[in-house]
Length: 432
Image 1: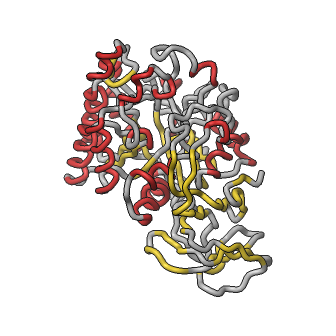
Image 2: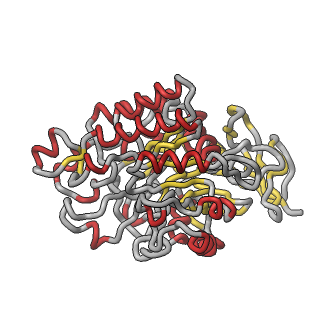
Image 3: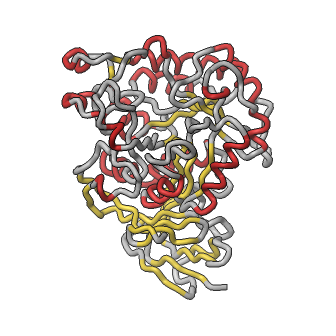
């Protein structure tokens, strides 16, 4: 057995923070020791760094199959690894839609040599059409743990109830329950809107999406969760009303979890003033009061996880006029640094938001999200908390370049990423 030790860092996981050298068995990829001075064949010094469980993104669009010009699983996994992620849950709005075992198998085949674990989610309804349920039992047997019609949201309340009731009887091979995730948007209210409905949309002459389009769906699915007893996960919350609804639901003991994307706690709808489509996203950027509410939700535990909603697009599509360009922004390589810079949270809380909670939500806690202890798979991110860097769209690993953060200075950099014991990022550079 040959071993590698990371020495001099501060370990932070569910157990808090402590000094410790992490020793990994190079052949099995497992952690064999977490103790200062443990012997090893090779040493990597990480003085001044945090050693944390690898990040888990529960909401990412890697475009394959069907739109490989924007991103592939290989390029997306490289971006993820550079961002400290050791697992990514991919969304089903691929072409063809991920609503069958065949497409799930295709995604997993593409992911065989990825730089992180790729876990495909599947659509709740066939083709994400909102008309008939997908073969959920078959998909669970194929390894799917999360279901979502992300991008549209399931509009039919009765069908969503049926999906929740059916899902309540489905268990994974290890006996855990699956989760249905909802894109919270009532399309009858948001139709024709390309940004937040408010002062800026009026000034710019652009169609708006009211906050109520999101909040009505949040309220509906909280009610359906209460009715069925089934857990619901609410995707990319962006309004103060949504945060308040989730906070109240949790206080009442309902099985609801929620996520927020970095752009919804760092950017406002005022960014759209220049009609630059890089700031077009779905749900849209909101006013400062909503941004602060999302931040509060992340601080107080109302929002369980940061999810990137990484959405690459080809340059020509993002150069279309604002009202016709596709919505979406890159997120994997910048998410942690933005949260570390903007949220003023202790690293322990960031580990919960980026690692522990999303791993638990996605059903990956047996191997992702910590704790960092002997016998566990070595899925780790090693963070330099003092390193300041500037986001450069031309230097990102993604095939796309549609980041709204180009030129922004951030603090906190992923120095190394370890996936299943393999160093896939060393000193900020991917190893393959």
